[in-house]
Length: 245
Length: 177
Image (cartoon, rainbow over all chains, first blue to last red; front, side, top):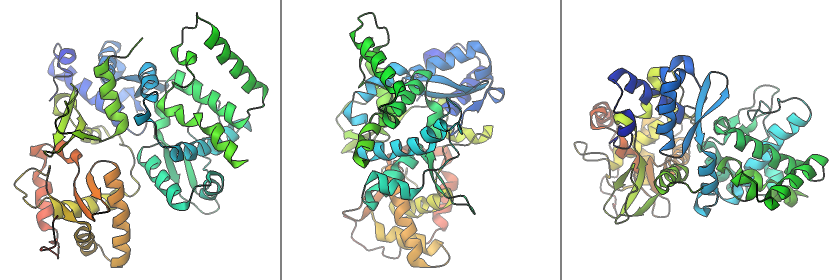
């Protein structure tokens, strides 16, 4: 069953081997980033390199969302290749709903200083009513989109509790964004939420320069269509916003 | 720089979840194929036969489910109807009418049977989205999903015991086509 990993694991004794396997399954399947104190293969740099190679076999990489905690995500080059494959892009309804959740739960609280600069986790739920009104989707389609987004871990439901209204927040998958993916998503949100802002103009100018600059090193920057599957939904944010006006 | 096609195929299989291809299509290296004779579903390979169940040993929470208890009971009710030869492997199993599954589930739950059937219908869809079941809503049938093919034989004993204790589907003679 594990011929795939055998060349990487062969040289390790049983103990090290099982530590690598445990860390691999933990970063690939946990809901939240896992603390390295619990997994020797995350703690020790030599083992962590082997773990990185195991993840790399499926186009994955280690992501460290906070000091001493780890999770896995798609490598940037793999994410770009997947986003260019129409079969791997979720339907427009899901992208529109997710974009609305990111605007209400992250972009707006961040703009008012309620949320830290680089966090994609949010305690501010987007009410269902807001999604219903802004997405302009029939109720059945909206519910199906939310069901699939929840199952994929892209949104999480917050239940109403006393005075607090319930709704949807970004899901645990947002822990899995690489630095590059987070930066792109941030830019896409700025373009969507404030297309006329000076910041948006600066982003557009920078992207234009990279497109025209043959020295540009970042392949994602050269092709604005090819980006991480986690942030491709934000690409449609502008579109979703346009529809609501 | 282009991505190694084998790496990309494995990454693609993860993005798409549990998707099927014609049974004659080659299974990319490093993935496991679960075939029912007509179609083949691509499943991940995990090192040393470990499964994500290992997370429990490390007090690490897996991806959350909406109503995990209810979802597990509906999966059990569905398997009760589709996995009728319990000595065999659960995959590929057989087809069963959804209505039978709803009856078995209603029989397992307390309270309003109509409500139980409605909840179970939603759970069947969720289990189908995630590859634990294959649901054909038009035909009104359900069968085990390819993910059950990842269950290891030595882990099945307690599940078989549990299923034997569940009520039988009432409409045993219902058409199975």
